[in-house]
Length: 86
Image (cartoon, rainbow, N blue to C red; front, side, top):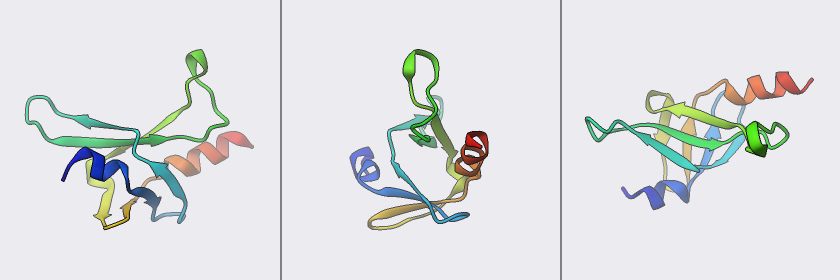
């Protein structure tokens, strides 16, 4: 599978059913060449240093299923961002 194929799929959190968006980046272990995590945009309301949006890093072991159109993940990251907003 190519990275462009992964980027075309929506990432869905199975914990709360929310769409986290599309993959913006991936992390690869340079020693093994294996993909270790995917990165999706965080909540746009939180700006980090120099106005950069927060990112949600999802470890490879939290990916439940890669389907034809979506990637199902299990993460509490989006829930944590909502709590910060209150």
